[in-house]
Amino acid sequence: MSDAISTFEEISLGVPDEIPVPTGVSADVADAVRALYTDGTVGKKGAFSREWTTAMAEDIYIAFHEALSRKGGAMGRGPRRYYVEIHPEQLRGWTELVDNPWVREVSEAVLGPDYQIVELGFDIPFPGAKNQPWHRDFRMPEQTSVGRRLTSLAFNLTAVDTVEEMGPFEIVPGTQWDTSPDFEHGMFPDKKFYPRFADRAVRKYPTMGDIAARSALTIHRGTQNFSSQPRPVLVLGMDAPGAGNAAHHDMAVTRAFYEALPERVRAHLVCPVVDELTPITQSTTLRAS
Image 1 (cartoon, rainbow, N blue to C red):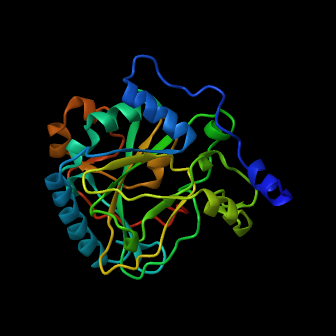
Image 2 (cartoon, helix red, strand yellow; image 1 turned 60 degrees about the horizontal axis):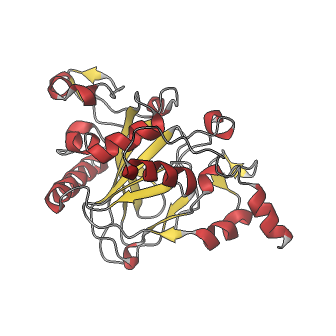
């Protein structure tokens, strides 16, 4: 083994000796927990109908054009690529999304019974979008680096049937445990580590109705979109109590919307309940999601 490869391997803390699979969960959920602690990502085929996903895509495009109409409504994530954070009421199927049994059970199994719903947004790489730098969504917290626990999850839902030309999402299994002083801001690995990621990277080709969960620490990137159409992806962010990511988002719900939610959904909302929604200005806080 070369010295270079040894250096790459040394940046990983390695999978914990004992993966914290809760007792009493289904085999499907137990497998998901193991996958998130080892690969850093797991998928569920056909979790939603194509009709539900079509409505989601329509709401994404409505929200995107509204965001473009005002300063700070959409944040650039590289050439021809944008991220927009939205309120739950801008997505007709939000309640069905967060109350989906797989979403609910995986969130509880990984993050605990008091998991928090902290983020809703979407990423759109348009035709001509380029490869992103390899990155994670935020720096590794001490609960992970020392305590060896995952404290956040990102759920992704594609709005299209993904094909190679669209610039698929690329993720590097196991890198949720990578850490080095040479990660700028704890998020952006130095280019000397790129061979490690290129050798291990896996491209994902989800279709409408599929959902994936990943540790937001797993190294990933969007790739170049050679097609003639955009590839929108919805992002739902979940936290364990104390993870603190809610402070980086401005999600809110109206009182009428909140009161109509099932109690099992309300119990996980930590955002403000307001009389009237204010359009979200994208945060300038350093985040890569």
